[in-house]
Image (tube, rainbow, N blue to C red; front, side, top):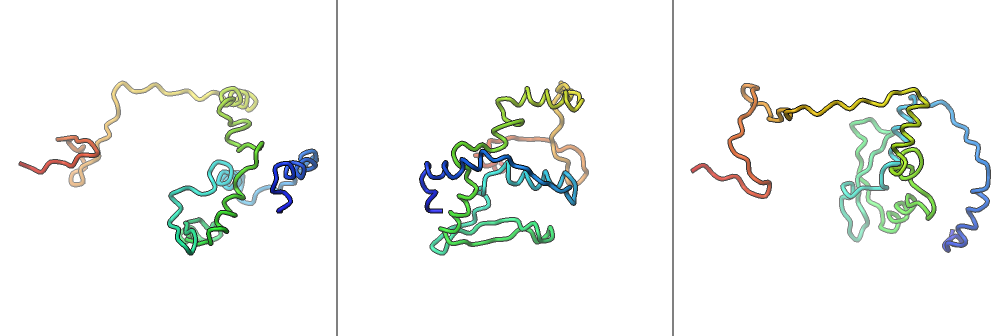
Length: 169
């Protein structure tokens, strides 16, 4: 791996791989196409680890939360602490090399071509453009129900988020 540290050496290593014709053998999914899409979406449309999953770091390493999909749903949330250098190594595995693009920034779902490609996809699939429903004249009533009677709550005062409510006089 040390021999691939320079950009030139890495590109030289990738050159024959990029020229090769790839044939992908894919079996039908056991749980159906929805399971495949759910699996792929975890890797194609998210960052390697979000800030909210990082729980802490100190001299022992980095502690973070992750999901173990091999466990039952109630036990999936797990916590792991890795040595800092191992955490960074694993994180960098998910950083794409220069010249590669994430799926959401390239191809069918790229924002620059999204409108045109979606129109073409709908045409090829014979699917009509979804009709947008007009906005209602009056906004819906967003008042929470009263916990006692279930009727709509009556707003008696509104205050800014950063202000404390006043005490009764």
